[in-house]
Length: 496
Image 1: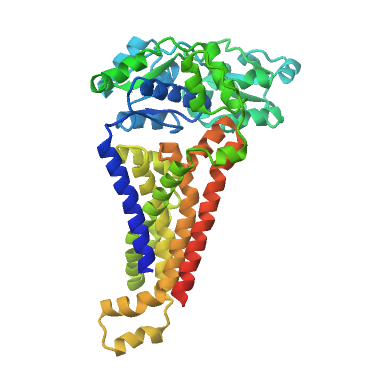
Image 2: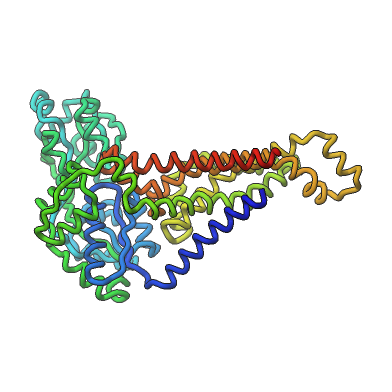
């Protein structure tokens, strides 16, 4: 057990040392963030590629979640810029009606943030139905939905709750429908299969034409103007003038037709985000649009990096959980007064939704990525280890305990030389459970830029691409089986 624990600590230390060495050897890169939908991924890749072509070290933290998560990451300096839309900034962040860049910039300036680099196109919200269904129901504009109470609406989580989304539409048009929550990437499939009758869309969605949808007219002009812009930290132009000059060259560079075509290349043709960004910036590159198969995506060039990131998340949090969980379990086993509070508190963490905990940790840690992800996974890992340690120690038969007393051992000596060795198999079982659970839970950490196999899963969800989903899920499943097998071998060795 000591050897195994030493290997885990050494492995985590090695990864940490490598990360620190890389950070020391390279200048701080410009970090671009993006939300969890196709267009934001693409705009983030275009910004990153633009910076790298200008000789600036740049990183793209993909699919960091919704507006609130991106804004928190920007405010804490975890990212330097991200693409957003004027209507979203005005309504969601600043709670104002004005969407002109000058007023938005003035409002953000006291926060150390700015908005600029209008990319050249607008992407507004809308609701859409299948053309045939809309024709039969006589629905062509949003006000027509008021008399269609039986229609089933499938709306994305962000649109359903944001102020300029469903609440504003329902209030302005007097709609009484009760929408169901659907991920944006999956809603098209649900609409095509007839499981819902209407969904929210973005006006630059490539699948509008593919699924032959009727975009309902916003006849009461509820939705504000949604021009695509970059939100950035005000210190970016001073810290890296070359980077800021490069980003400014994107001003007015992307038309609506360009954006629809790029979205189609990702969602319909199955092209990668980075390849699409490079070809757009090359202005005329005509590389063949070939959808990669599962094997190609599974063993893509990013597999070693994702594996390394996933291992750091899993074993870094597990090592911390062992260091804290085993002593807590020992304390709970040694005192009835401590047992219930310790078990209750560690169990309470399990009731907190993982995404909520990750989002909560961003402002606390002041960063995104590995640090808040490891903390969250550490907290989720505690319960199995604490419970297993407590159960293993309290399950030792009385005769074995009394043998230590008969030998004249002190309380600490009995714990060290009698009780812990007898409880080792049970403790190791709890560590195994935590490790296997961590492998799966760590995929969620990709939502805050921690990388790992979840990076592929989030991209697959955004694109509704089953091959991409499997390319992330299969390695995670294989790793979970491998971890389980390694701990099984360790348990057998301890038993012998």
